[in-house]
Amino acid sequence: MTKPLIRQLAHTCLLSTDLQASADFYVGVLGLKRKFDFIRQGKTVGFYLEVGDRTFIEVFENEQASNHDTQAIAHFCLEVHNLDDTITHLRNAGVTVTDKKTGGDRSLQAWTSDPDGVKIEFHQYTDQSRQFTGGDCVFPPSDLPRNLAAI
Image (tube, rainbow, N blue to C red; front, side, top):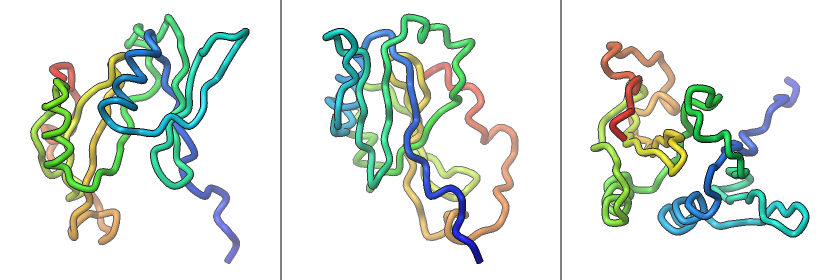
């Protein structure tokens, strides 16, 4: 058997209308480590955030980021150690976050959005998570996170 072509997700790139607000959220609230900045002509135009083992979020300043109708990313998901603690932390920081629920994949999840409206799923695996047990995720359409506009 040959080695798979893809090793893992390297990074997700987000556009931000306000780099400081994004840094405050991702570093200040979520506690991610700012790995390095992107500098153009002496000005910070973006930064890299360390999420885990060789996984990053890249954030670039872009005044068009507020046009959510053309946003190419539906959401991204961050695995957490304890979803209850994460929800409590976010709410204590003044961040709106959904209640915990079990997704179709049998993992626990809660949702929020960043300052530019990018949807973020917080995810905690369970012993029944399909990522470990296999099998299809079967759920009624109402279980899909289609309308997260309230977040």
